[in-house]
Each structure stands twice: as structure tokens, then as C-alpha cells.
Amino acid sequence: MKFASTATERPGLKKDVWRHFSGVTTVFFQKRAAAKKAEEPGFQNKVPRFLFHLTSVLTYWFPRFGAGLLNAVVLPVLGHRLVIRAVVRNNSRIVKSLRRVTRILVIPDIHIGDAIMMQGAVQAFRDFFPAARIDYVVKKSAAGLIIGNPSITHVYPRFTGTAFPTAGDIQSLQELVAENHYDLCFNTSSFFEDASLFPKDQVFLNFMTVAPRLMRNELDRSGNNHFLHQSYSFLERLLVGNGFTKQAQGFSGVPITLSDEAILQAGAFLEMEKIPANKPILFLNPDTASPYTLIPFEYQARILKEWLKTDCSVLLGASFTHPEMSEKLWDILSRDEKNRVFPTPHGLPMEAYAALTDSADVFLSGDTGPLHMAAARKVSRSGNFKFRNKTFVISVFGATPSRMSGYDSTDPLYLSANQDAPSKTYVSESPCRNITCVNKMLKTCKTPRCFEVLDVERIAVDIQSYLRNPLRSAFPKAEPSF
Image 1 (cartoon, helix red, strand yellow):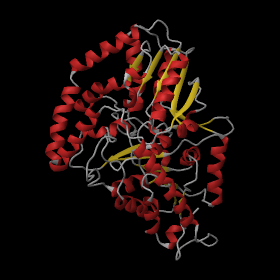
Image 2 (tube, helix red, strand yellow; image 1 turned 90 degrees about the horizontal axis):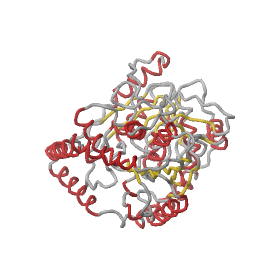
Image 3 (tube, rainbow, N blue to C red; image 1 turned 180 degrees about the horizontal axis):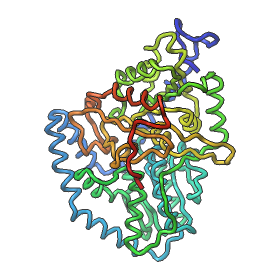
Image 4 (cartoon, helix red, strand yellow; image 1 turned 120 degrees about the horizontal axis):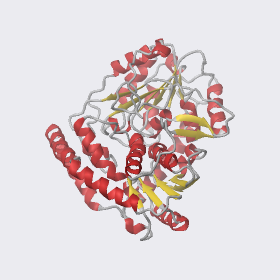
């Protein structure tokens, strides 16, 4: 599929293609915006929302001073070793109270990236309790990426919210917990921390209590702070420290498990567009779920133009949260350039989009769900297909702390993508970035200044270096993360 253009459309394509998709997606996003407004979390504590708003006001008026002040206060206070020890003692008390561990529920956040990353917690539990029932409750739209993971007993597609859980999501989770009488619920979402939402005798372990260790690591510039890594190592430290024996070794990352239908849909798109198999394929994911992680149009345009200087094909991902981005990028291309750029259809299912990332030699994205799709190991649910898993994954970061969700095989302080290829993180310059930006959902900055300077030339040079010889990459490999 190509965006229509009266002057530059490719032969044989209808001129109303983009108009049709634009109309359909406009209605879709109007409904989505209304749904998002309707699900604003009235159940959520207003105090943290107010505090995060204050941090946004502070850095708006005093960007460098405010950022320095917040880092100077938050990191040493929350990351104090006494706080870490207190949290460990409390979590140990919870673990020691368990009479048996045969039924476990892991609760990720409602976002797609979290559903992918928190499979690390599932694997940790499986390594310690190989015979246990380990269930996983996820957003309905993410279920197709998770179903088939052999470490999960049951995947429950329950959540429907976009930015925040809906009241129905809360009720559905309550019913799931009440019905199955879990020995332990491992909660990794700040939206479900209220113990009063669940039966009084339900044992909960809260991943959010890893925060002091993350703050300490940020302060000391040590350790691997990636949420995926920590979801596994948090449980490993806690369980080993309380006498449990690990039954398996060698955790290297998480998979996404894809259906034959999704794989065939991705293949059909490549075949329909006649994308050459003998040239590199570069995949640009232009959208993110937050304005604070969205790579600005000007930088994306420069990245796209730099790519097109090489003999390659470019996949241009569809935009959803910021629907105008992919259209604007298409509009800057010349006629010849459009013949080498292939926009993915808005109607392409998420699982097919994930399968399509495997065809790319290079995948570039801001901090958002598709980044974690590209970084995860692709697995065929049926076993009928074999994936390449050789995508050079590039993470570009604005507001959010890059070590917590970026991938970089060249730096031991980062997690490597679960691919047989390098991964690299590039962090933009920002005058106001600080540790409170980790919760981008609660920030209220009027003017995002998360991407004031991004070294596009450096990114382009590194990609060219990789494409010249992917078998002997110029990037040094760091020590394994796990």
C-alpha cells in the first residue's frame, strides 16, 4: 500500500487510497480519544498526579535547574541504601509467608511494551517453580504476541484501556483473582497497587518496590536497569535470598510468539509490494504512545532522507497516536524516493506488524511498544516457520531514562536486544530530562523539550557501517546482560 498523491503516486494505485484510510482512521482516533478521556483514572491517587504536575511546572520554567534539583533530591532519597534494605525485608516477609507456590498470577501494566517485557517475571517464576500454574493477564490487543509462550499456563486477554485501565479492566482483574485463588499475585503495574481492590487474604508482591534499587543504580551509574532485566533479577534475588532453589539456568530475554496467520500476512505484504529481497530493508517506526518519546518530525525526516541515500528499501510504519506523522513523512519524498518507501497499512494487525519487523535489517523507533516487539525473539507458535532474528534494533530516546527500556549491545549498563545482531541506543540532548520523566503518563509539560538535539549523522554513519558488513560489525559487544 502507498499513500496516494496526485502527482507522484505509483502506476496502478488508486488515487483515493490515502483518502479512504484517512477517513477510516480519523473516525477511529476520534473514538479512541473519547475512550481515553472516559477512562481517565478516577481511581488513581491524586497525590502523585499532582506531584508529577509540579515537577513538570518546575522544569518548564527552570529546565536545567529544575532537572538538577529533582535528580539531586529524588535519586539519593529514594535510592538510599536504608530504603533498599527496608524494601528487601518487607518483600522477604511476604515470600516467607507463602505456604505453597503452585498458582501464580503475573500482572503487567496495560501497555503492549510492558506485556512483552514482563514475560521476564514469568520466566523467573518458571525457573524456580517448574510445575506451578503461572497465569498472565494482558491487554486484549497484545494477547496475540504472548499466547504460545511455553512458560505461561494461561494467558488472559482482559484489559482494554489505552493510556489507563478502565473500570471494566479493574473489575475483570478482581474477578480473575477471586476465581482462581492464587497463592501469589505479582503486580508490575502502578495502576493496581491498591490492595483494597482484591480479597483480603490475597498475597501480593509488588514489582514497583524495585524502584529504590533502580534509583541507586541511576545514581551510581551501575547495574542493568532495564525493566525486562529487573523483572527477572528482582525475583531471582528475592527467591534465592529466601531459600528457594533455581531449577533452570541461562535466561537471555523474552520472546513474542506469532501465529501462522500473522506470519503469512507479513509475507503477503512484502510480496504484494514487490520489495527486493537482495537489498537491505530499513524499518522506521514513526509513532510512539507519548509526546515525550515521539521523535520530532524534523529528525525523522532527516533520518529517512539519509537512509534513501543508500541502495535500500524502507518500510514506513503506520502512525496511530500521532496519525499525521507517517503522512507528513510520505509527503516530503520525491517520486523516485516513493518507489523505495513502503508504508505499512493501518489495517495490518499488530501480530503481522511484529512479524514484519523480522524482515528488516535495521529497525528504528522511539520508546514505545513496537520497539520491544522488534527487540524480542520471534517464535513461530506452530513451529511451521523459522524467523531470521537478525534485526539491528535502534532505540532513540527523549524523555524516558534510556537504560530502563532501551537496547544496546555495546554498553554493559544496557540490555541487548534478543536478536542475533547488534542493538544501539541514541539519547537526544534535553535541558530538562530528569528521573521523574520515567513516568511519562503523569507528566504535563506544556512544551516537550525532550529532543532538542539528536545526532542524526551519527545514527546514519553507524547504520551504513553495519550494512557494509553485518557479520563483522564495527560495534564492540558488551558483556552479556544476564
